[in-house]
Image (cartoon, rainbow, N blue to C red; front, side, top):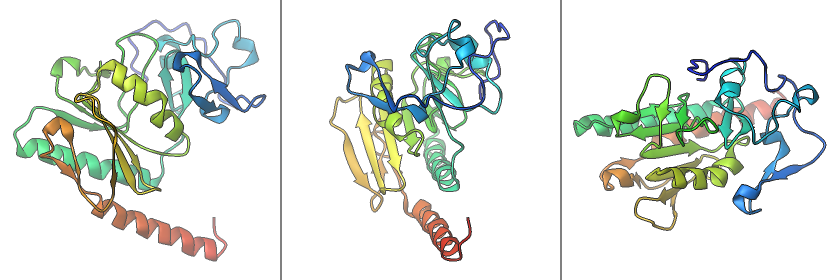
Length: 250
């Protein structure tokens, strides 16, 4: 969603549209005490011509808003991370979950707002981080402005994909917790499981299978998300993929 900037724009692009780092296999950041090893293909390349301008870890919202419209990235602590185009099953999963959340909120005459991606979240209210979660629920309307969600949502959900799964399960866990997100879900469609981090109640992560509804803690467990319909559609897509593979089609 990035193009509505309220910041200045120098006209410079922080990197070119082509390629990624290919001279090393991974990056490790001291901010996470050496525990995170993010593959190079998940981090955007910096062009040689721009090394004197900014390096990874130094980018800001000005650089973020200067990117081309078709470049999907997240900015986390001054580092750009690539986001691949989502798959059909990814999009259907997040749409269905968001509908269930919004249906519950409306049934309770609630004031919280459930939003699917793409929507920018200026998580730390600074100029070094702008994330784009798959689903957010925001109950504090002071944080909802037209440009983005300004501050920590109450609930964040990420549907894991190959280009984001490591980031979603490592860097973002700490970022969301430290920013004040009350609850965080990672939904793994491939492994058919949901991990729920209940930060507000300081509980250990809970792991659920898709065969049971998953309670939403910010709503005291009264809202429960079902994955039956989602996986009915996912399995149909998977069957189509197998048939196409058997016929030698891409």
